Length: 294
Image 1 (cartoon, rainbow, N blue to C red):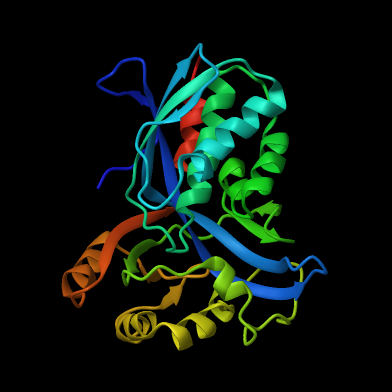
Image 2 (cartoon, one colour):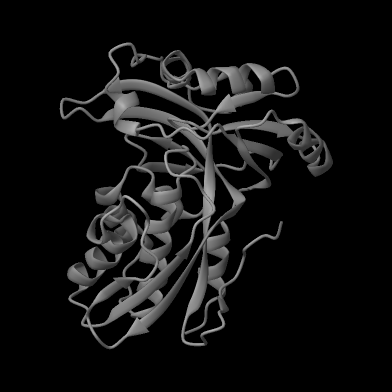
């Protein structure tokens, strides 16, 4: 496993490759629901040194082309394409892009694959097109694409409030994690519209947050509806502190060392996919953008 911390030319020299890291919700409290149906959340997001890779080539044509379609997702419905077109339209940019994505993160896993992709495209094209949109404005654009996009634009581990757009930088310990996906796809909309979902967890007091005493309000709903998630969680929790991230289906187990995480990975029951990664308070994409001189 290698960390992705800086853009690098691919075999086609005109393309630049950018990391699109995964995230974990170290906990997820639902503290209310707005009149428009959106949920008020409290969560701590932390990045992982593992994710997708997005290669982008700037073009003089205004067309946005995703060269690696994802099965079951229409070209114009992909968040990668939506993000590119949104930045293009907002800035009246006449340039375009050809984009290729190497997917490693599962869809419907709760680790932010689509949102991370969108943020990487916004950050990268803002540089490549020289549109000079501020991070604050990019976050606002990202929020219109998905509640988790701003955290990836922000690029620093954060305590999130509101619908996920109010971010306060934090620095939780950077543990090693075994992240396991039980190969079921869980719809975020299904979880957030579930009548049994807890929506009234008390807001956390200001000050130091004890992550150990927090929880994921989505977890009971998911494990009651998806036995694959329930069985995996009950197995993992026998070996290490384990919790579902986001709306699932991925479960992460926490370790002090990489070796411990790898040892448990070898014991996993069949039918699951997994990876081992280190927590990162600064995202690999933020490091890449800061290092990019164009």
